[in-house]
Image (cartoon, rainbow, N blue to C red; front, side, top):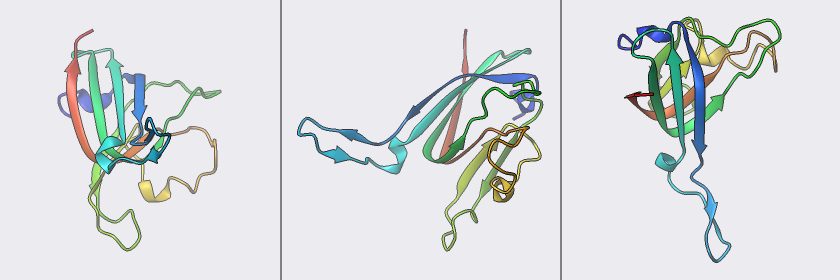
Length: 134
């Protein structure tokens, strides 16, 4: 967060989602393991360093806000925290990233579908990051 200025004046440039699922040569479907479910997001910002990539491993949930009528897509601050109380009856450690510092993962579904301003968020088991040179 310190390295990337809390994502201030940044935006999602692109993302790639890979599920752990597929179909083999015998046309049998497989699920893979949790670590196979990944989301890679490249961010750019108006300050140095310009680009960073976050890799979410063991992706559990994702919501990416698209174009909105009366809002810009830039990020002013973000939320990044560990939680162990998001799955009822289990205390699994999960990482939550969101493009709003005021995000609360427990309230994320109460606002209504497509209620603006929308928030992008990802919940995963692990997080890696690296600076990307463009």
